[in-house]
Length: 405
Image (tube, rainbow, N blue to C red):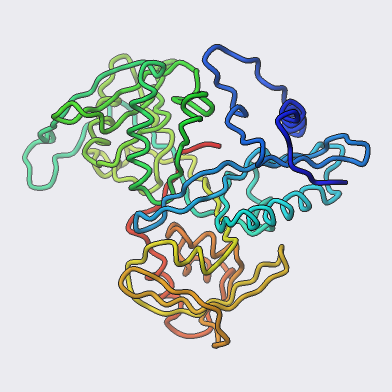
């Protein structure tokens, strides 16, 4: 078996193979694009082929930018389209592709890789750890009254700006601009390259599937938020609410919850700790469900990754990091001062011993190291090391990723 890079001439074979791996058939082309694979970068696609040239596996990466704690940014390879034909599973094809892909990413100078896991048990063994989470929030419309803000005698707080209802096909440029501003403020968010919007290669409201979009504009008329939604059988489903301003999110949520001929509203993609439930007069009216992992992170170069993000307290930790999949181990002294880190190899005794996948989980601040210590994943070697790690790795707010790839 050979693992090789794909060419433009291989795209149809690549697409057919990955669909066959999942037992599906490619969608028929539609007007306006909308095929998820049209956003693939051919030079970042891999094919596993038999000696006779038959393809048996696929893997690819997208070129993204990931927002890190401290509103810093780093290039991140978004792993996608990973599949092995059912006839060739459990023969080492997937491991060979993952090893080849990681080596290729390092050769490109990349130090972070991210993915959305189709099955949770698969990718931990390749060094990925769940790092950002998402949930659904369902609110019955009859129970959707907002509580009076603290210090006010009425639930009606002054609202500036306005909401305009458009169709998704009419406001692609607005959504692209608003999303890019939002993702630069949200730890864990990924860029959506222009080609995704131009090709409509994603999930609603990016895709050609019909959606209404509630666009919020500030007092000067500048778009500063949007919510893409659809209504079916009395349920209004919000695909995503995008804004960097909590007050704008509240305005868009109120728009959805005040919609006529709707019995309930489902906010499909929100952080599990989102404050919207706390804004309701009846806290229990907001039902959180479907809490799940979303973005998984893998560090390919520990010092570069740790020095790329921002930090919010000073401290010093020695981390002993094992990378079983690549057969590597490193001990690093992490020193944080004034929001920036230095990370160098050391022979000092470790404060914490952990797998690279656990470091990936903690990296964005969405998984407390103490949780992983209690789970038996991380081993603490001295009193106070766990509490210090919790303080150091905590971000300014919970990481969240909306982008599907």
